[in-house]
Length: 145
Image (tube, rainbow, N blue to C red; front, side):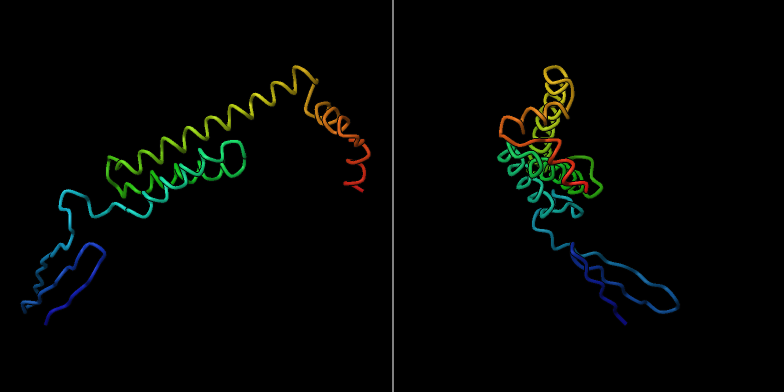
């Protein structure tokens, strides 16, 4: 009696030899034997793509923040238990980290400018909306009524 259990890396063939003994033979169908079976090419490519999108949309804070975070997560998950990252995963990790660093610097810079020049975020919002001809306090009251 032969039992085949197919997996993503090939197949494990179990041979029943009788008397309660079972032997196992692994057949690998991996094209590149140097590359680990546990790595995920899709996650590497997703990390690279999201890293490029994060850097390309750096002026749009929220898409860059989301794509950069996902690029880092996918790059780290693409290892599959291995110690090293492939080139695509490293590139996605670096691009995602650069975009997150720049976004965080932009947020900190905005908070510092708001505090130093305007005395806080609310005063900055009042000034910005006032320059557009909108009463900030009336806008806030209408939102919470």
